[in-house]
Image (cartoon, rainbow, N blue to C red):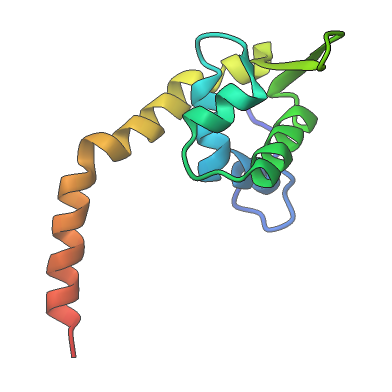
Length: 122
């Protein structure tokens, strides 16, 4: 089956989607939402180092792309919960594999970096 899109074409809209899902914050948000709906502050606490502004922007972009849902509950204060859409759920295995690959192979990457740095040190 041929797709009407080609990621190797510079004007292809798939490039924007790849850019979004390859972003570290997007990967971490999608991985956090993998098992259950999660509130904003829970996400912020789980994803160390992300600012409130960047998390908010990331969530909006993922929602716009149809990958997550945002549900507002009429409580005082207002409660907002995020969850994966059916489309977003199709990414969970790939996202988890990428996210956790880094954890599993960080030592090898660091060794390669040291080797490279030694080789090209001036």
